[in-house]
Image (cartoon, rainbow, N blue to C red; front, side):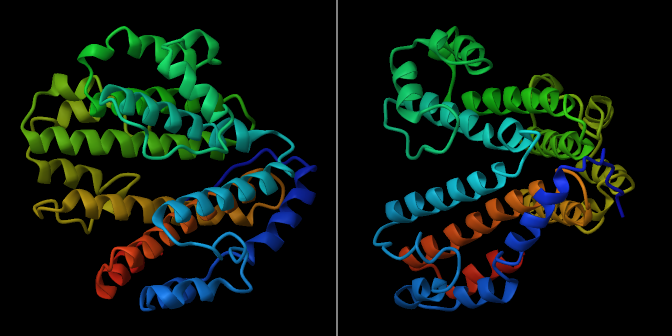
Length: 333
C-alpha cells in the first residue's frame, strides 16, 4: 500500500467533516450496474432522490445530457471549493478545464468548425476565450494560456489537430506539476506525477506500435513522472514485451503484471488498468483526517462518476447493446 503523506492543517478538520457527509451521496456500484440493463425510458427515473435528480430530469437529447452533467460537475466543484481553504482545487483541478477549452477551440479553428463542447465552469469565460482564439489575440488571456496560444499561433499553419492536443496536454501537465509542488500537500504532486506517467506511457506505446523513431517520442515525453525519461530511452529498442516486463517490477507493477500487450486493443486495456490503479491509490486519501486529500478524493470520484453516467446514458440514446454497456462499466468501477 502506498502511504500518503500530508502536512496536517487544523482548518481542514471542518472541511473533511463536510466532505465525509457528501461522500455518502456518491453513487454506489450496484446502482450504476443496474442502470446498464434499463431501457432509455426508465433510466432517468432512477435518479429520483439522488443528487442528480434536478440535473437529469429534462434530458431529451445528447446535448441536453452534456449540459446537465456539466452543470452537475460545476456544482460539485463549487461545493468543494467552499471548504478548500488552500485554494488547491481551483489551482490544480478546475484549471484543467481552461486547458481543455483552449485545446478544443484551437483544434476546431484548424479545421474551421465550431468546437463540439466547452466547459462553462472553467475559470476563464468561454465566450471570452473563444473570441480571443477567433481574433488570434493571445495577449488578452492570462498566463499560462497566453504563452501557449502564442506558441501555437507561430506554427498553427503546419499543426494537425492531434499535434495541438499533444502540445497543450504537455504544457498543462508541466504547469500543473510546477503549481502542485508549491503547495504543502504531497498528494497534489503525486497525482500529477501519475498523470505525467500515463501521458508518457501512452506516447511510448503508440510510437512503438507505429514503428517510429525515438526522436518522435522524445518531444512528447514529460519529466517529473515516477518513471524517469531515461527508461523510455534505454528500453525503446527493446521488444515491447521486455519493456512491459521491466515495468511490471516497479511502481506500476499492479498494472503491467497482468496486461497482454500482444492483444490488438492493449491500449484500451492499459487505459482501464491505469485508471483503476489511480483510483485504488486515491482511495487511501479519504482516510486522512486533516488535509486536502479527502477533498481531492471526493471531486475526482465525482468526475469519474459523471464520466461513467455520461457513457451509460449516451449509450442508451445510440442503442448500444446492454452487454457492451455493462462490460464497459464493470471494468471501470
